[in-house]
Image 1 (cartoon, rainbow, N blue to C red):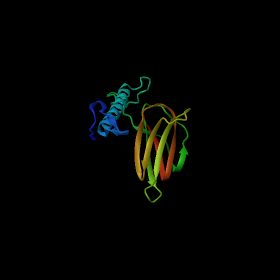
Image 2 (cartoon, rainbow, N blue to C red):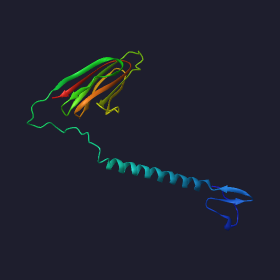
Image 3 (cartoon, helix red, strand yellow):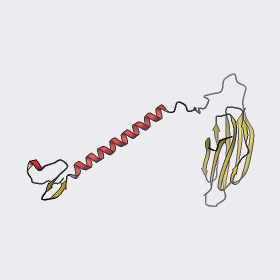
Image 4 (cartoon, rainbow, N blue to C red):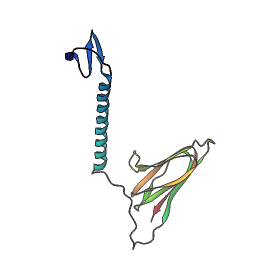
Length: 172
């Protein structure tokens, strides 16, 4: 803090003018700036939390079924289609009649440096916007993703420095 000897009427909590020079009280100015930034961030966080809790009432929920009914017949995964290759591919359309299906994939790095990437996007027929990103993997990997929607779909498979296999299975 800068202390100056001057008449009381010239004192100001933010600074003072003495002999034509301006002297600022930096600790007080920095404190007020810090408080302003903290309040601004707090308001943004509060708005984000309220928005996340409220959600969009018009948005469809994509919830997983909690369990299968006890008296339902035994269901199993049925093959729908599969593809293999490297590079980029848009698949032919496929139809899902049930409420649950999955995409299984495997990727093998061809770069020798573990620098391969595999991305899988699912599109609903008639739309140019992806419905979901089902995979975004790097290196030698295999996994699966579940989808809970009926309809006619196609995949866009993007492989960089990778040989990949992708298959669709429906729970019937």
